[in-house]
Amino acid sequence: MNLIINKYKLLSVITIFILFFVMHYLYVNFVFNYFEYTNFKKEFNLYRLIFIYLAFIIIIFFLLFSKSSSFLFFINSIFTLILVIPNFIMFIYTDDFDFTIIAGIIFFIFIMILFAQIKIKQIIKINHLSDKQNLFLIIILIFLMLIPFILTFKFNITLKAFNIENTYEIRENTGSQMSSLMSYLNSWLSKILLPIAIILGIKSKNWFIVTITSLTLLYIFLILAHKTVLFSIIVVLFFSIFKNGYKQIFVFLSVFLIIVLISDVLTAISGNILLESLIVRRVLFVPALLNNLYFDFFAGRPVYLSYSFLSFFSNYPYDVDPSHLIGISYFNSEALSANNGFISDGFMNFGKIGVFVFAFFVAMVFKFFDTLKISRRFSGLFFIIIFTLISSSFFTSLISHGILLLMLVSMFILRNSENENE
Image 1 (cartoon, one colour):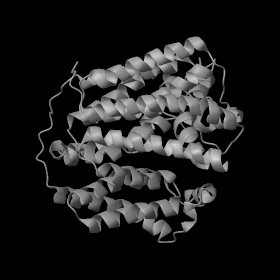
Image 2 (cartoon, one colour):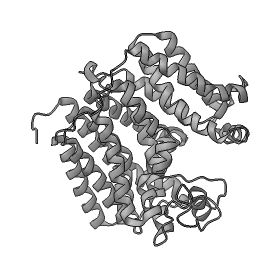
Image 3 (cartoon, rainbow, N blue to C red):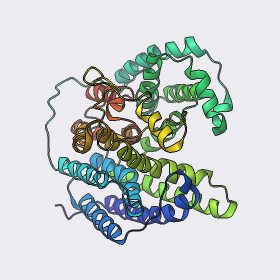
């Protein structure tokens, strides 16, 4: 272990520790108080609390002292914030919270830390193009993928998309016009290609490209009303500012902590819980809640991807897909699509062993990206990918949400761009 610690790495770990205590407080005093009716529980267990705090301290210790590239430290820090902390806290207060979830998360974090100690040489020997050439290729791809959207929706945009109350109405209207191909293209454009074009434009100081690609992302948001699209613009621009990976994650964690504290103050002063509900409940604790609900429903009856590409292997026993099945079973809503990430996805499909297998696969994906030595300016891309893996099934994330596309683009375009970082 390297005892010479980067100051931003140390500050990041301290901030994560503070966030753990803050989220513990907010779960008890905000999430449970306001949303108990949505299956959040407060069944305090001292032994679980002691176990969780010891486990979290050990994770923090290895996160701080183990050797790691700034890329994998960034990835581990984000996963600690949005995967470890909420699931650990809910385990303390939920008697029927399946321990396999905690074991799978601990396994995943330590596999990531282990992978950080292993150096793998690049086997790709492709000549690296210039930023201008890369940008040209990306713009061509974007233009081709945009054609179906322009032909279908033209420029009939509406500012109603900025009003959360109109979101589902707009999605219902546009969803009926979307082909399966366009659903794929939407994710590939908004999560991968347009963010890359924005960052390459910033690197080359081509502000025309930055403006056009940002407006294109905005166009997709206005016609489809997917909040993740607007979120992508903000995230990509924020992380593109920083060249130093450790400083990057420290600033993000600090900003996130400040926003959380401000949202709690606003709740106390005005009684308006919208901002705090969105950030604390929806982003952090709802995926943790859904983890446990998936484990509860599919215990002893894995579906072996029978609703997906392994349908030839076994028959899917339900009338609706898993996300709507959970919505109907636990929230009494046929419209609710309760998607969730790779931990519960592994369990739903292959039982307990699936949790660890899928966790290993996800760790391998990020180790692959680590070997490519990608500039930290592109960290916003990986932040988006992490959120995708937390809220979507593993194979859906790979194909539909563009992780495989990002792997290809990274090999040919983003590889060996980190020499600008420090």
